Amino acid sequence: MIDPVVEAWPGGPRSEPHRRYDPLGDQWVLVSAGRTSRPWLGRREPAIAAPRPRYDPDCYLCPGNVRASGVRNEAYTGTFVFTNDFAALRPETPARTWQEGLLRAEGQPGTSRVLCFSPRHDLTLSSMSEPAIRGVIDMWAQQTTELGEHYRWVQVFENRGAEMGASNPHPHGQIWAGSALPGAPSREDATQAAHLARAGRRLLLDVAEQEADGVRVVVRAPDWLVLVPFWAVWPFETLVLPRRPVSRLTDLDDGMRDGLASVLSELMRRYDGLFDRPFPFSFGWHQAPFQEGATDHWQLHAHLYPPLLEAQVRKFMVGYELLAEAQRDITPEDAAARLRAVAVSQAVAVPG
Ligand code: H2U
Ligand code: ZN
Image 1 (spheres, rainbow, N blue to C red):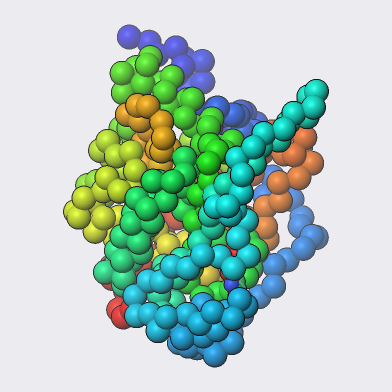
Image 2 (image 1 turned 90 degrees about the vertical axis):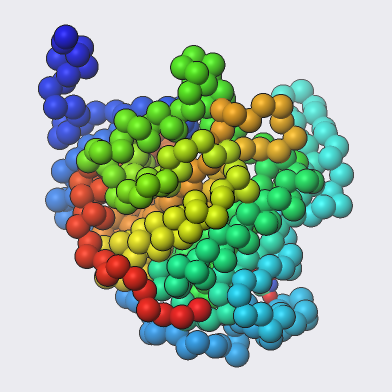
């Protein structure tokens, strides 16, 4: 049988400028490979900062230190959660609405928390042990259970590195939870529901099956797959996918949590090894919203959006990207090959 797609484009899209469709986000990305050879006279990101101490008396996240609010952190030994002293969302906000002609607004009750991953100021997810990463996964799941009782959307994320606006190198993430379903998850809700209705299967399980042995795989484990998605926007963007039906972090059993700790450790070390520097990124989980009817169309996944194109050169989303649609310079296939080629040792010896 002749495959019409292969007939139209033998070997699939590679070097010519082309657009790729993102069936999860329902958007397109322009791929114009080869532009990286152009001379770069723009901004170079500053060289890497000096190694950090295990404990920093001036850090507002280190155990026992006092925060801007005057509150003292617990002398924690594993993970530690507190309500953001400068929270973007607050529970007491009234959920009222306002409209005048085309102008609309709605109050957004919610909460923002800060999640410390480790008492050690000098570590990151890439240098933490697998049991310590497992502790972070348990914290994400526990927070999801707690906040899902009150809010429709629970957004777990980490901004890593000064390039991404992280205010402190101490290993930490955040959770913002609120009463509304925000834009990106709302599009994913619609695409996943439509796919389940049409195909009788979860969209991202179909993607995992189609991609499992392919050129865009970065890490493959029995229960998990890390891919540079076919439709990746950021140069080294990845998608972390469970290979079984899982709607939320809270649904992960012990085995899948341990598997995830190992996969995340390897992924983070691949990123740090790529340019031999701590790799900046925004990383976050998308999971089924709460207070909804059916959620079987939702497959848990994490997006990892790193800004770097080269060791000290950022990809800017400007010009055509802001005005028309996202564009990328290296193909997702090349990005995946480069991440796979990083030599990572099997285990990390650092305690904590
Ligand atoms: P980022 O590094 O991703 O910015 O996260 C750190 C958060 O910590 C930030 O949102 C909060 C900031 O509001 N913070 C406190 O809650 N208390 C402090 O004493 C300083 C910073
Ligand atoms: Zn610290």
